Image (cartoon, rainbow, N blue to C red; front, side, top):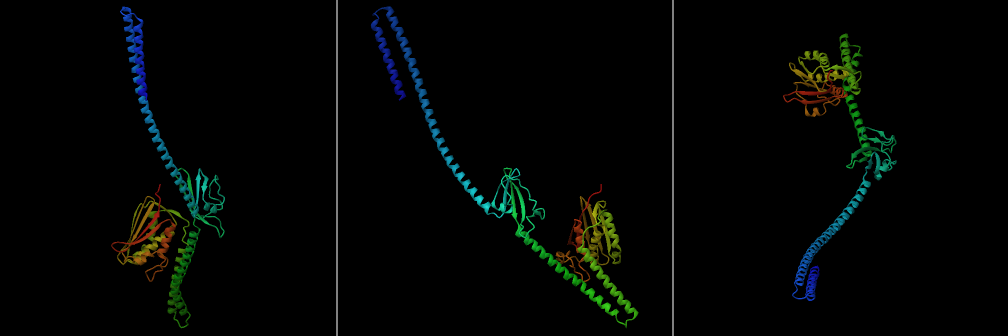
Length: 423
């Protein structure tokens, strides 16, 4: 349309130029030199103006075409952007709806959980579920969170809400969220905790029953023997030598009973008291000296090797020495004459490793599993309390004891005790 309009304007301008030229030819006399020059000048100017006007219209047409093309491209881009925006809005709407459904599902899940969930922001309650209210009724949004005073600490992780029969046992657990907030979980472990307490009570009662049975078994034979010897002493026909013999045997049985009772009391009352600082070498040398004569009488050699003997222990000297002696006595009973028992000590980096090795028959697998239990013994003459007392004495000093069999025969005991290096 714009091209046709420009063509019409150009044709109209050319027609006006022709009429202007004809009018000038009629008004000027023919053959006059001035008139001819004037006509020629006017024609030249008219032709130049028409050419410039034509060129201007050509530029205008080209600019119009470019403008139309730009407008068309802009319209297409607007249309495309409008479609993209509509699609994005539809996707965003779907995402918002999905997130809304997810939020509803999470809210329903939190309400159904048996665990209290509390969201904290800057130490204040931001949100919580229904279970939290039943466990902590005072909860309010915006209030500060702290462990209530009425909650009694059972251990580092568990709290009892009250001392009544209906008191609950809770285990708080804290977790950090990605946005800097904190999620506090209140686990209600009342049922589990009560079941565990009941199991522990039953285990203690069962252990007491087994111990009572073992004590009765250990005391029955020597008591019966002592009773028999006492009845013999009441006979009037005994000679002085026989009376002396029965009295000595009775005294032996009563002494054995006294030792057994003393060992049981030592096991039951194993608590460190009057601790002192002693160096490793001094303690082990004293232990060796206290039992070496017994080893020599049996023809068994006791060897002691120490590394880091200047390291120090905080122990009840007699108690820990008695525990080590119990293990050495056990090693002596299984060592044939001419053999040796090896004691190796290595103290370094806050730790004492003490190894006691014998060349005996070793420990059976069945006995190895219950070796440190009270009254567990494979010897008909043993009480089964020596190793139990040793284990209790070592553990009460924050130590450990383990037993195993040596590859080339015999048993090995490994004792670990905490030490500190001298200044």
